[in-house]
Image (cartoon, rainbow, N blue to C red; front, side):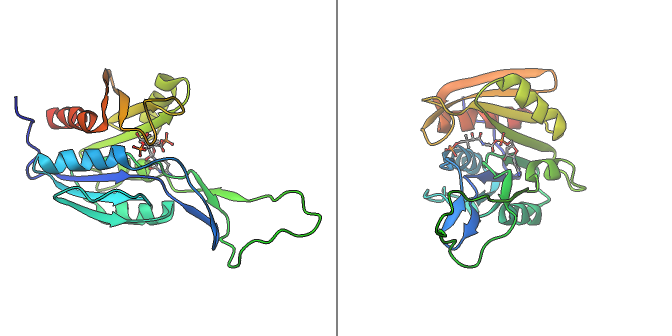
Length: 217
Ligand code: PMT
């Protein structure tokens, strides 16, 4: 059976980590490789969608037929995503930093004699996914991801409701064979009155299975 077409649909995908600069040599980051989001962008382009991929700092080639915007920080990702609206579907697979340093120090932070610790003040970043979902030009379908180490369904459903999403794809992180960096994953997809387990399978296969759900809606 051939995959359902997404021809004519505009799909915006975020992928990868964000890097939050502390000073000119240091940053706060996370383990996201971008593989999950890039697989979704590639699969959507193969189905004929017009795909814009907003990518954090990753070392992956741009999938064929995909337009890509590279960003570094959560603030840059926020701007790129908002500038791309309106779209039909937004899929937030990026691991966006929840906190960023209150100030970026202009010069490299030096150790001072006798100083045994360093306190960094962090402030919250803007929640891109929640803002897309409550935007005046809200996409018809807003899909989030949830990276969890425990209480997967409870936390994912909490995000589904709080952020006003149509679907959320929860995945376990911190265990081998799913989540960050690896080629495979398992997605627990939740919606209102909806629950489906996708995988375990390769991220490419999961991207296609997720897009079957998108096409069905
Ligand atoms: O990139 P890979 O190595 O392939 O790994 C894939 C993945 C584990 C990164 C991916 O499958 C995944 O789970 N992505 C979301 C990771 C995450 O940040 O989850 P969260 O539970 O912290 O965030 C929930 C949702 O809110 C996510 O859709 C996130 O993009 C979004 N968010 C979070 C914070 C923020 N400031 N803005 C956001 O849009």
